[in-house]
Every structure is written in structure tokens, then in C-alpha cells.
Image 1 (spheres, rainbow, N blue to C red):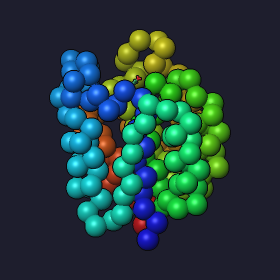
Image 2: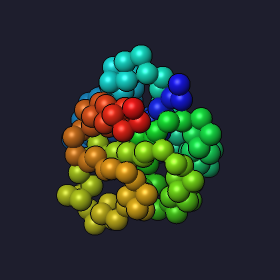
Image 3: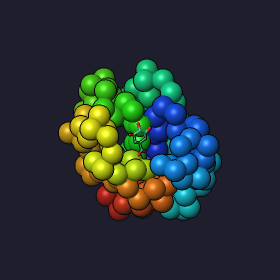
Length: 142
Ligand code: DHK
């Protein structure tokens, strides 16, 4: 069974300590647990990187070995054509996820490059959004 990949971008390793008034208190370990609870016995790869190149490498890996992708590209959402181009090569469903509602935030968070290729976008549900995204992706791949 090809796993689900849950990929996280820059600064998300600081969740729990990072701007708690915006991102709340859940840590990245909590978020991983939410995904694994939603996936149940379904295989799931959970990764985080502050490196654009590393995230692109994981997307290339996913092209050959993943059934679907949940991705919170964080700040790369608004800057990375390279991540968009990499995701274009992935044939399975892609759910773009943001902890916050980016459209209610500062203007530089309003234009996502990733939404152009995403099957669906979830934003503003907090860390619980990861649980929703994983469950929704499972429905899309089954
Ligand atoms: C996370 C980030 O790091 C920001 O760059 C985005 C996103 C929002 C989030 O809501 O998960 O603006």
C-alpha cells in the first residue's frame, strides 16, 4: 500500500512556541499524532524541513511512492514556483493545508502558488486541520 505523505515547510518545527497567538499551542509532534490518528493503520510519512530543496526531494520521492500528499508549504506557499513545478509531476491527490486562514492575514499571505495544483485547500482550522486533511485525503485515495 503506497503511503500518504504529510510534508511541512519552514518554521513549523517551532510550532507550540512560534507566535502562539497565531498558531496556538500544538507542537509539530502533536500535529503528527493527529495525522496518525486520522490515518489509523494506513501508512503515513510525516516530514518537516526548513529547506526548499529537501521538500522538493521528498515530492520527487512521493511521485514514485506515495498515494497522496498533504502539504503545508508554510512561507514557501507564496514564493516557490519550484515546489509548484515539483507537485505538477505528482499524479495523486494533493491537499494544501494552512493552520491559519491565510486570506484573513497580511496581503503577502494571500496569493498561493500551490493552490494552482492542489486538489483541495484547507485553511484556518488550526492544527486540527491536519486531522481533517488526512481523513479527506484517505477518502480521495480509496
Ligand atoms: C504557516 C506559515 O509558516 C506562514 O508562512 C503562512 C502557514 C501560514 C499556516 O497557517 O500554516 O502564512
